[in-house]
Image 1 (spheres, rainbow, N blue to C red):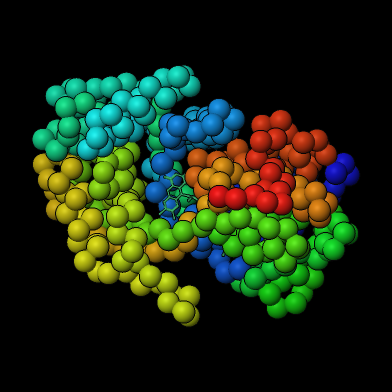
Image 2 (image 1 turned 120 degrees about the vertical axis):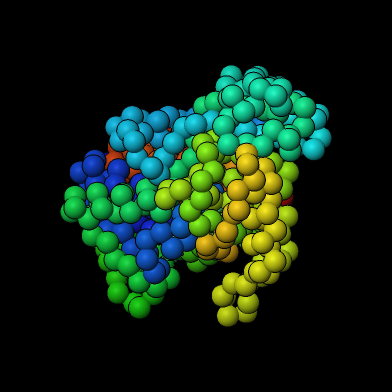
Length: 374
Ligand SMILES: Cc1cc2nc3c(=O)[nH]c(=O)nc-3n(C[C@H](O)[C@H](O)[C@H](O)COP(=O)(O)OP(=O)(O)OC[C@H]3O[C@@H](n4cnc5c(N)ncnc54)[C@H](O)[C@@H]3O)c2cc1C
């Protein structure tokens, strides 16, 4: 859409913010609207392991690697920040064949992956108790983590200082247009309308609902998730750990961030949409963190944040302009930490140049055609 000057971005998570900042850098006038506050969605409670080693399709692997590349540049320009690090990842499983298969697949794609003997772990991956490890583990030296609340705050600052207009507490916004017509702007939950030449929907787990109002179905597998943050402690961990009972990484302020899936049936959303979690989960996950850390330090949970995690039904990202509603772009993905910077960059590029980006071709919303099944 050449000549686009005014763009409205809906959703104040990492994808909305990074798209908005890139649009602003490219010379557009940008309005960012979000339901409550920036960072209040999944981006406020994410483990944010930056990785590409999960046996992904080749196009998705490439996109994730480009995502990691953008974070590496960000870190090179901001050395020493305490909210972004590339100190590697360590993976193990109870089934040794799962680890070997993962290593083989990663090596096939050229991902930095090495099998390591348990005894060599303390020298290569400090902070882990080797006594809990199986004989062989998988090390990925190129992986990292980010604290998304820190990144989102930083992007919001650049956005507002650069002249972008941020509207928080806009309620559930909808697109003005559709029904065969292009998007013309955004309507807030309280009825105000803002005209725009293009609209970006980056509403996290809420994206399929907004797109659905335009008559386009985005099959949705968004699911429960819960992040726990510890109180500060001496832990010596630098890498991201992915283990059978816990995923764990350092967090700013000498804390740890942790999550997993085994407890999710004990996390419930009430009919009034608030969330509840079995308090025993906090103690069990903290005990597991203590068990895998060198010296078994006491881990105290300071906060826990349940909520939805955005996931498209086929597990691959959804990026691009809706062919049924021209001028309306969608950014809906899981692993939105890894893809946060690259996703925003490429969506903004398409809007600013009017050209479809080849890296996004496999991820268009239209792949869920009539008859799509999970
Ligand atoms: C526990 C957990 C662990 C995770 N681990 C990882 C990981 O290790 N690696 C990784 O890469 N990713 C991970 N993720 C996923 C990643 O955090 C998310 O994909 C990413 O944060 C999504 O960002 P977003 O901007 O798309 O959505 P969000 O951060 O959810 O932001 C969307 C915003 O839009 C607002 N909104 C919704 N509907 C509307 C509407 N109609 N009008 C206005 N505003 C609206 C919401 O209130 C919200 O603030 C994890 C997520 C969770 C929860």
